Every structure is written in structure tokens, then in C-alpha cells.
Length: 256
Image (cartoon, rainbow, N blue to C red; front, side, top):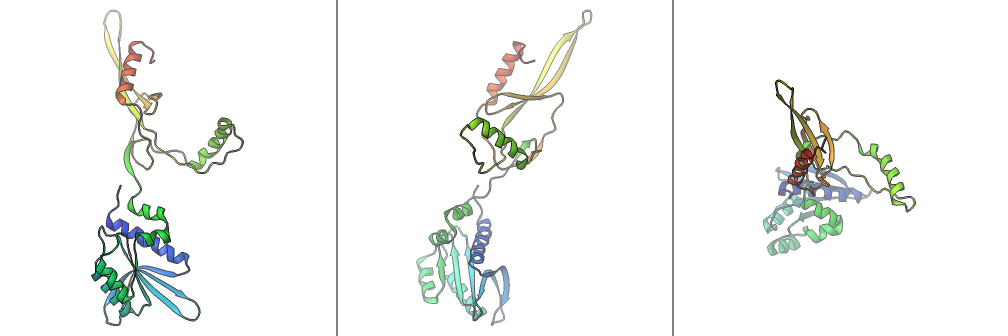
């Protein structure tokens, strides 16, 4: 799922701020300062470093627009830098800049960071993360009742038995949602010798959508709810195939 420019901008600010913090800068994000002109300026990131002799202050403007920035952005940042008496102005733009903006930045001493510069400082993975948001989907199902740390001992035990290659290190454990099909099945039968009565009983069977295997049944309609899923395994077996199997098993009385 692609992020909006606003979401990208907030994430870009957080990552750039973290970069400066790792290089021993004190930072403030989304703050307002009053300049010498009396006007107030909002700064995405203020990075400050004190070495005991001097204080160096830089402002970083983050742009995650879907288009390159124009020279008016550079001119504005230059004005803010001078009005606040800062030492450096940096513009971080995910989608680069126009030729006019680059020329203006060179003349005014404003530093431009495009995608290549961002990758050098943050890494390609961080840049890729800016483009996509974490996939979350609301589904109908049963919520998790077990934590990842609860299943770790079981996974470690199974890995030693199944892998047979000595001790194996478990690098990570991730919960995922198993796709299932829920079928409401009506079972009818006739009772009585003199007065024939047709009685119907309903059950709800659950089958996994990876192999089509029967998992469990409920005597009453299960209480399903909406849950947020992050990792979902895609179904491999269509519900029609399981339905045909249920009908076949029912007719041969092998389902009960």
C-alpha cells in the first residue's frame, strides 16, 4: 500500500532526525522560532552540535512531494536560515529538484539531498520503507490468544526433531494468519415410526484454505469478530473444492 506524501514526509523527518542523532547532534522536530524580522518560522528538524568552543546549528527541510522541488523552496529556506541566524540549511527531497532549484542552491549555499544522498546516509532499505506503508487489513476471524514467546519452546523442540542437522538457531518468529473457510452445514434426518418428524441440526465446520483439511466443528455459530491482520497467508484451495468434498463425504456418510 503506497503512502501519501504527508505520511512519507513524517516518516522521512523521523529517519533524518535519527540520522543526525546518531552523529551526536541534539535535535528538535517540528518547532517554531521567531526570527530577527519578528516573523515565526516552522522548522522540520533543527540539528545542533556543541563542541565546547562553538555551536553549529542546521535546519533540515524534508520534502516528500510527488514532484521535484522548485527554486522558490530553496529561496525560502535561505531566508529562514538568515533570519534565524543558523549556520546551515539542508533540503531533503525524495523526488529531487528542478535545474533552477539546483542553481539557486549553489548560489545561496543550501545543501540538497536527493534520493541518492538519502540512500548513502540511511540505506536503500530505509528509502524503500518510505514508499510503502505497513500492510494492515481488517479481517473476520478469531483473534490471537497466544504470544510469540509462548510458542518459541515448541518451535525449538520441533526444529531439533525435524531438521536433524544438529542445533539450529531460530532467527525470528512471526505470527501469521491462517486462511480458513467456515461452512454452515445442515444435517437432517427423519425420526419416529408412526409420526414421521424431520429434525434438522446445524453445525459449523472449519477447513484450512491451504490443504483443504478439516480442523474443527462448532455446535453453535462461532463468535467471529473483526481483527487487524498484518501477515496473511494466501489461500491455495478454493472454497468450491471443499464444498464438493463436504457433499461427497456427506453422501457417503464419511463426514460423521
